[in-house]
Length: 142
Image (tube, rainbow, N blue to C red; front, side, top):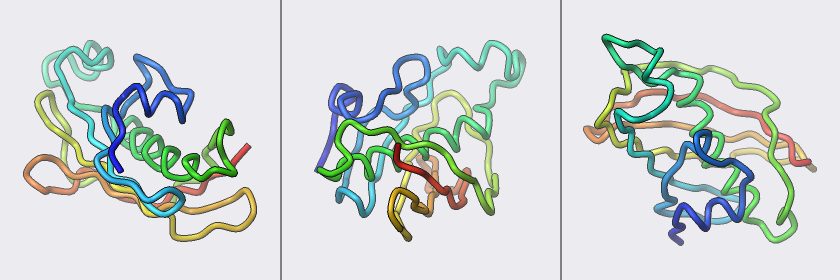
């Protein structure tokens, strides 16, 4: 299942400039999702991070992954109209820089779910297949 930006915005509440996923390329609701983020020089954070060496902040890479995970979990019919909140981030590792021109593939697999709480295993890769960030995110459905 593929989703456009407009369809993503029907599932999660994020909007520009904080919507950090452009498309969902593949998804099994409640199980996994693969998103794409095309990183352009026009991203607002590049003005200050860093003016002479633009690098996408690691926390925003984590947020992009969280948004993909939120699309996966909120696509389940019983979660329609709800919001997914961060509960924790564990074992986050930043492996490579993300710079203007990169195209990130954002993969999240829901590995645990109990009631309104769950855990997603997340990894982002650049267009060369190099991991930029990985970790586990705990979420709560509210």
